[in-house]
Length: 388
Image (cartoon, rainbow, N blue to C red; front, side, top):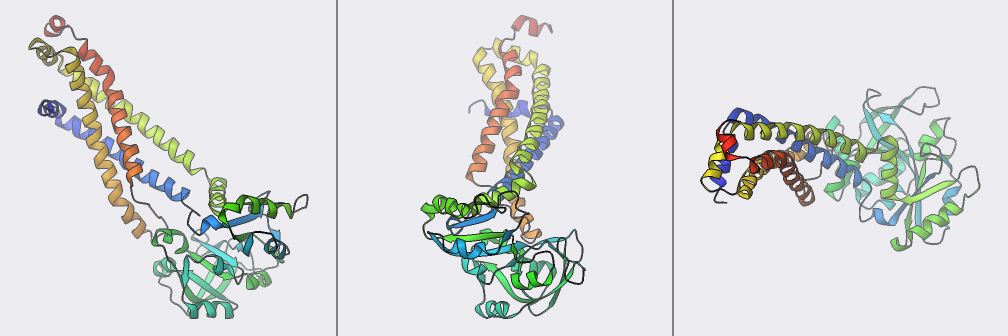
């Protein structure tokens, strides 16, 4: 620490170059903080205390293939299953086909298996009694300015109704709120409609179910129950694949895109570019002050001390920019969540992200400073002072 003033002075010897390098490092770690948050957000999909005791059963071939409704009673009779419900993907959009909304046609008991979703009892009764009724997430209500009692036109990107049009109309009868605000990015942003109305109104479903959700009596027996459910349709034309809700959510995401691979690839490219940029800055900084380093050796600084000074300067450079970038990501995360109305649910930059980020900062700092530091350590005093 006694040489900190010396390291600081050398770091800001060329203020413009140092500031531009710091901005690049800040941008890299800001991107790291935000993308890591996106990755964690996708990984947390379906992971909840209640989700641990729920299984999801879908077609073994693809999640877009449907299953017969007759499986409902057979799954319910499976040993270890407490309750079973089902749903279909509706593919709803509001005003424009590109403005898609999570919308599902669900069985009457669907909400019974999701106690983490809060609905006013009177609104729940209205939903059960209204054929065209829908429950809408609180986030969507605020986002579009909808109100309970209003007629809601939706476009289905998949299913036409009986007149051949993909324009559907529903009545908003209630609002869904997540009991745990951390899960609001999902439950806040969806619409639930009556499965019976959906099935009777489109000629393309005909009693088919998109997937089943089963509540198990003992979460520790989930694997056994899942195998028993899949055995019900073994060697049939509708073989199933049953997994935990978290695994099912991850499977859906991976069929859409491998978020982990995408984030890893982007960050790999960003940090590789950062290595080249910061490495060039450090190499140029050391090259400019070779005579000064020779003077330090002349007045008694050992080779190890010179090596440490250059490495400390490199690590400090990356740490300053990296901490500022991660700090900015921590501030922007909640703003993005609020601004998107919960569509983007950015988790906070937690201890694990800070630990990983700080490790990367130190590692990058040591890596980019290694070659310039070794060159400074091996510097020959006579040659350096002579300009050779």
